[in-house]
Length: 235
Image (tube, rainbow, N blue to C red):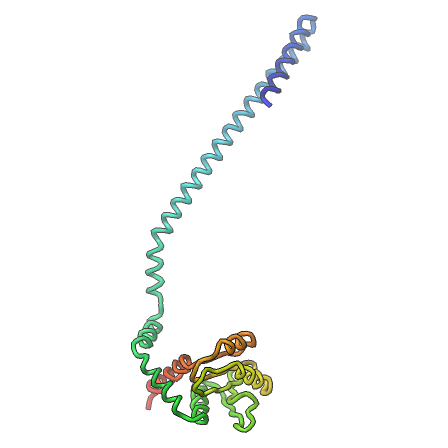
């Protein structure tokens, strides 16, 4: 681009010189003026582009320095954030976790006691638990429960509860029972509670069907909290 511009200017200079020699002084002067104007514009354009490049380089350098400062500040603040997060854990939750770790034998004793009672006593125990949690309880008949042992009702909730107190892990046939109970009693949810565990097939079916599973460990935690609540209640 610079070579072409230079060639044009040289060509115009030759033309103006030829015009001057043939007596066209005014035209030659106009051509020379145009050449001078073009040269000035070219220099101004080059200077403007050079200043623009320098400005971009300075701006890029400032942004990089600002980014490095921000990164160093984040790295310095990270340990403080972690300490603040640890300190922000509610004290009650810390106490609950410490209590759970300190005395797991209490929950083991609860599970052992559930293993020793009858199915009827297990149903009465769960009805008492849910009633203490604020639910309204409806029991189904043992001869034709239609897939649910308890129907518990709360604010905007109606849950069909299937109870399985047994020595072996609960299989996926119990999931079908819980679903049947939810449909028959017009419940919004289906829960399956056991003192044992669930097979992998049962877990997969429950996840697909939206059935909530409560195994022995979670059940023991529920009843453990119930005992604590009863101990705290005034006599």
